[in-house]
Length: 392
Ligand SMILES: Cc1cc2nc3c(=O)[nH]c(=O)nc-3n(C[C@H](O)[C@H](O)[C@H](O)COP(=O)(O)OP(=O)(O)OC[C@H]3O[C@@H](n4cnc5c(N)ncnc54)[C@H](O)[C@@H]3O)c2cc1C
Image (cartoon, rainbow, N blue to C red):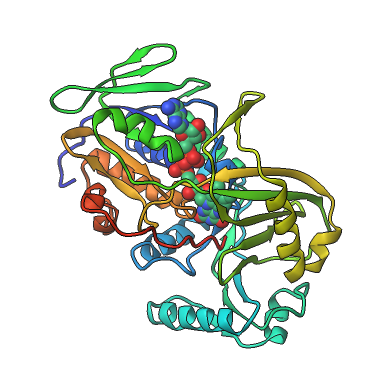
């Protein structure tokens, strides 16, 4: 804004995942009247199902500046939010289990080092074990990004939501938006399972369910929604500080600061069924995926096989054709910004992407090049989906 004061809006943020709550805080800080509405509660879907790696390494060039800005923000987030996010900047180790994976990782290191990222190629097991002594002898090489890390996703989302609430935002949880109703200029009414709201502006951060609300308006983000299996152990002695990924993204692992291992499978087809259990959305993982995930993780981190299994769940991803999000207004809907399609890596960048979406809604400079995140880039979409890169 250049000298002019911003007009205060009544903004309805749909979705209390990391994207919605960080956007809500940015809007509340700017003095807007904000309501966050979620069918369940904070971090009920991807932002709770996630591995919660905070990663710059392996990012698409369009996302790398956002990831770097996010890492800078994460360092001060506990202070800003007045709560513990569990963030640790303890690195990301991407493992090669054979020569072909080593070549893939070497190329990635060359590429991203040229882009200015502090990423090192570790050419043998000995070097990798200096970062993670618990690795098995299956590892032949790795990359290491010391400024990557991880956080507690539920604590983070709750901290954003509470901070926004402290600045006057209203939290409406357990309330589902049924439809958005448009008039000539934008969204005129939002109908929930309890009431009809007439917001000044709407920020839609509904994750895998985004198309349920935009399709009736004649729009669609081309999404595939694969599922990923997640296992969490009981607390173990500290053994692993960086997040572990692998070259082909068929597993990732980290040890939470409370000692629990939290590990993920690769992605597989999801039939699309969500079961509501105790008021939360649940996706049931397959037995085979659980077995394979235990085998894959144990083969690189043998101690995992001896840990006690405490929890298992599955999560679904909102995967776009180029694995980049949509952060944009939809055509003809001036008071609506959509932020979705984070393609399995939207947690770490959430503090930045939420702020970008909020600034777009406010009509001010988003602070980053958001051309790659335009909604209309899929207008002539025919190509196959980009491969998924789940590496924490
Ligand atoms: C298994 C797994 C591992 C992952 N690992 C990583 C990782 O290591 N690092 C990383 O950066 N990212 C990772 N991701 C991706 C990351 O978690 C997501 O990109 C991110 O959490 C998306 O946040 P969001 O706020 O956009 O969506 P969500 O967190 O899904 O939030 C959307 C919210 O909208 C609500 N909602 C939807 N429809 C409605 C409606 N009609 N009415 C009211 N509310 C509605 C939902 O209840 C939900 O709470 C992973 C994801 C998964 C599933």
